[in-house]
Image (cartoon, rainbow, N blue to C red; front, side):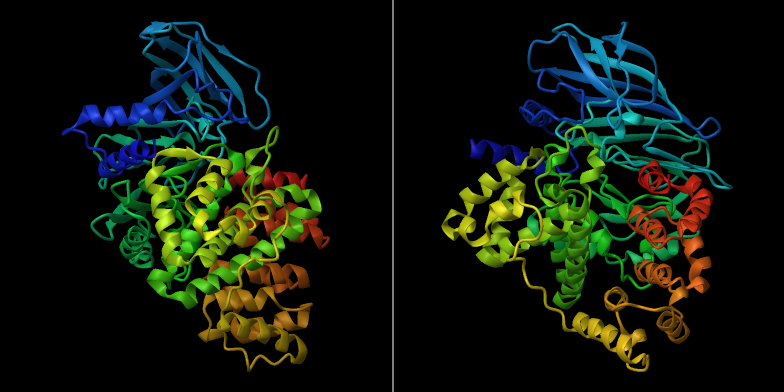
Length: 617
């Protein structure tokens, strides 16, 4: 059986861009075998993919910026896996206008919407029905979409975790993988891009055609429309951005081809053909989103000195962990993100050196410790790697725990068995499970079996790391003399107030963040002194600025509040804005938080809004 799985995976990888002219029957066979695998029941989806599974999507759409809607038809090929008289899709806030089964219009049923997961769309079918076609348009409730107004309109989607159903009716579970092709009509002068093969030039008529021949999960469906241009960065890499950002983006990401090659050296061939990045407006709610072939990235990583490009390494790493081998349900989210942070660190070490990656690891550890403390005060079970998210928004599980606790668990495994053996294990893992889903229990079983001779269970204490809350005592030690010196400088400054010993201009951004986040009991006089000496309020590095603005709020350094307001209005990245609003509220400055949020809210994506609304109400 293992040989068969490995053989299928090798075929899929060999067809990395899936151009099937030479052997379409073999490619189709591979897809059918992958699609027929039995899936776990997903608490966040109404669909029943073990009965009838959607297999291929043909999506025809028109993007209307005036009405702020997408009018579309979604045509699915069906795969019958068990006797069933209906196929069930997930929808939320969609206006369904008609449904056809094998070109014949049928009656359908849409259930009452429930929080987080929306409604079910139930379509009657026959045992031999081959396809369904759903015509619909999006509405104001489409949480995946953000329509940016202004002189140059822009639209982008964010489908993870369960928002794909707000712009495409689908079996919206990470375990369901589909191939797709699409035709999208936009206004002339704009370019449309998707998580698929993409244009590098605008078309005259605004019509764009896309193809994704490798099966992807629906949370990886992505669309962006705007006045963007393309710049090649290598034979398989490039960047898209608006005119004002294309030059700086190309310069910032010029090492992307080297990152891709470093990643392949570590864990095998890149399976997706090209790796390109689209720099989105600052309202994008995340640092990046790993849409296959086209990572969506926040402009907040454009620091001018490549200091924040670890985010690109992270999204690139998802091409293996997440996109190639995917979490079965959102309870297993750490399998995506823990692996990806581990992989990100290895790429950064390969390209920029061990000292650099260890500084990143120390920041990860610091973030993990703070997250565990904060989350434990609310629900300690959410500090486990394996989560239970039934009847909850899966977004609740997308915390530092999955990312950083997952990373340190995998790093511990590496340290206990040795890097060479661990790399061999990971290469095998990705090869044997390519284009498949994985849950925690199956991964741990695979880990134990393949590293039994290394006594992995005994050395690591898997049970405590995965199924117990908090941080185990055997968390790996991270060494960075530079970071320790920065932290000790913070202590000394707190004691003597002398800025002359602080080598601010020589520090990396990691050292600056370590200094700012490890100041014991900062006071207003100290913060004023630092800003006078180093002009920190005007820094162009958003990680440093975020740490600085947090200190400004704590000490009520009002001179920095104009920068705080500008930052919160301009930036929609939840990692930054949510903690700053939370800090304002916890320091009895809720009125300021409300005043700024009223101005900023129209610029935020629903992912960010849903988080901040709960704080501000």
